[in-house]
Image 1 (cartoon, one colour):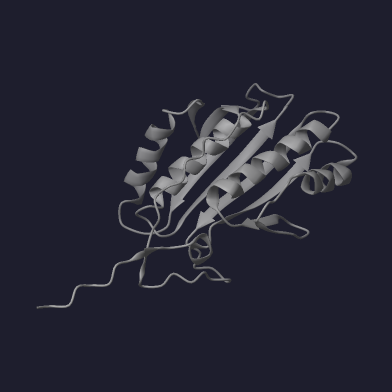
Image 2 (cartoon, helix red, strand yellow):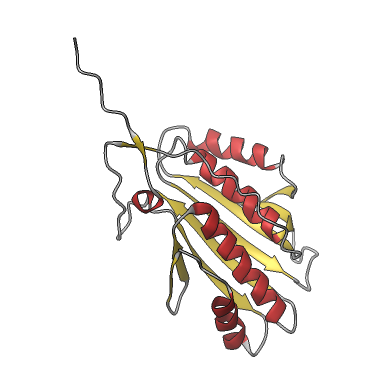
Length: 209
């Protein structure tokens, strides 16, 4: 009788390199206290958080990562006198970069988490892009993701190079994270990027055709 193959175990967030890099840009002269105050007030729980002069890196459980980013942006908007804040958010899992994660041959990709985050009470507009970095069906995967995100409580629009999303801050990030994590069930390395605008004074499109 042939030996049975060893059962695969689910990869941990550390093995997958699950995390985010984000930056916060408050539209106020007192931006330093807004940024540092929001980072100080947000509870990181068991996450690893490091801030340098460019971005903040946060790593750990994917749902906790997204919830933390939502909270920092919410607190920054509350602290900003103008109410106008821009956030840049990159989510990644499966990180063959300059600091690599350790994905062994005895692990399987875990099922997607549920990102049912409580409403932040902060309406946002966002430009979103998704990057499945592996496999031959990446364009089909992106189109499927765009179609699926319409099932969430967000408004979806097509723009040049990005998909436009409007809704509550937590709903927008939760929808994006769900699509990102679901694709990560079958593609080892997936990243997604959002530029989030809160309280912008220029909701109309400015420019030339």
